[in-house]
Image 1 (cartoon, helix red, strand yellow):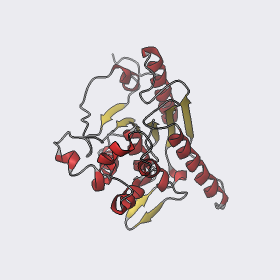
Image 2 (cartoon, one colour):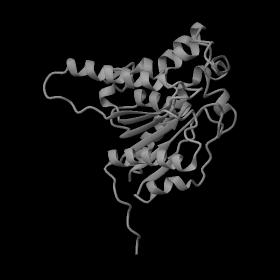
Image 3 (cartoon, rainbow, N blue to C red):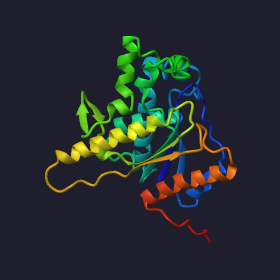
Image 4 (cartoon, rainbow, N blue to C red):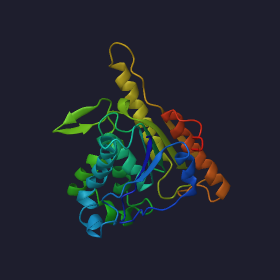
Length: 266
């Protein structure tokens, strides 16, 4: 069945299984909802975060998420996979798309995504940057600079998919359909980060099209939605928040080819 895979994996935050009424539209349409407890959270203790999910082990977070999706495919649980993450979870989505084999993900939603990691973490004048060094490391130090550069989503967007040293790298032309959301007044992830990410992806798509011979290849749908009144935590108004979730779900369901809810089983 189509599956909605959610992840976060940072700051030692545990994403415990819980009931969310806003997920019912997905379940009513036959989708499965999966929460990935990946390294970077503390679901399996502090070591899961402190030793294996931050600083120079941060890539474990992204690899765990990709492995969760591979498991869902291998076990026959998921026929199609939509992924979502917000803030540091948006970094998770961006980095995972770059590291996953083409076709693993079908749709992605990245909310207020922290994707320009290198540039942001190099500038101590940006609010929260110095505090964030405790999570990602200070890229002004060579060991952290090179490691952050290896996974920062913007810095790893490529035109073509490839395999380097046995590691798969997904090019933008093989990305899943992608919806990026941001807020103009976001003090944590400035609106220009997702805008820059979108511009980078579209540039690489254009470059790939120029060098391609033969019939044109179908390009992924890439959308950027910037709310001119919101901050980092989206709308504070309950009804507006529900409208925003409806927009996200509508995008996912449309790209998966799912429309009407399943009828009641008699």
